[in-house]
Length: 398
Image 1 (cartoon, one colour):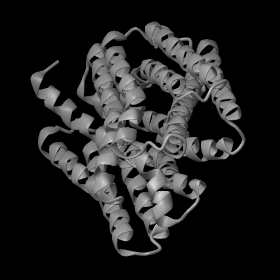
Image 2 (tube, helix red, strand yellow):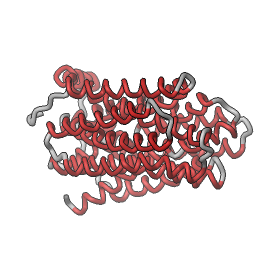
Image 3 (cartoon, helix red, strand yellow):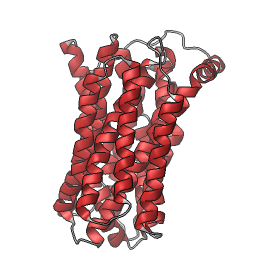
Image 4 (cartoon, rainbow, N blue to C red):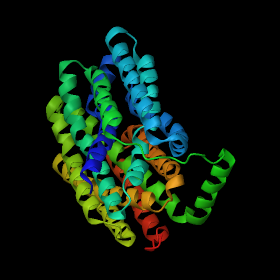
């Protein structure tokens, strides 16, 4: 890998790290926010969900614009808007008694910014590197940065909230500023077509892609959604349970939440380094990861023991860490450069669907029973195994 391009990659990796911090950093703080604002568990889960819902809608649009007019031209203003959203949520929490509505507005702006930043990183990696092995390695680094953000988030969120509960909102714009500076000065924007195709021509080409490649693309989208649904849903459950049943909060809770995420981070890094450009290997690694995820969720359905739960979540992190970089590589390397931004953005949008659904669905299932919650999560994980084995059939010419 070219040393100059290494700095491009480091700068790009800062974006998913920052965007992950903007969302996951709030997970350990949600019970505190619920108490401070005097709202329900479903309402507090919407602070995570609303960020993701608006991103789901806007990510494909951002992907299309990045294909036509350049990645940096979309990423930098998006990071700026996300920072403004963080400032609004922080200011409302600090200055307004009934702050929930304004916090939601700030989170909406953060979601809009996230839609135009993090998802465009994957196609930009594909643009910068020409060798497929470098692309796979680069995507592994991006996914590792994403998951490292998830590891760091609960600890950092708990540390910041120990100062004052709304401090995580104010910290986010600072992180965005760092990424903005790195993008401006360290990333060279690959050239785009001097004459972008008309919208109707572009839409027709996207339809053709789904007509020819839809079988495996839809499968990858659904699996990515399921992985994020399970991850964020169970993290929401664990955060609530640690505080309500075990009286564990603050930094100690943040460290516990970081354990399964550390497993995800490490396995993502190793997977990105080892899958190379072999698409069949990507499928096999994905299946193995999803089987581990299914078994882990099944094992915890019959017990509330905290050590069994943490062990199962560690295994779940390993499983998801196997799957996500493989899915990223399948999508990025299987699509031509001209449509790559749009297709990978739709994939990112589906992952955000999982993030959006996880906390509120788990909040509802928690009212039923522990067994019901993990029975549903196990079933969903098993569905992802079936989809991978049945519908993803790559050839090395893909």
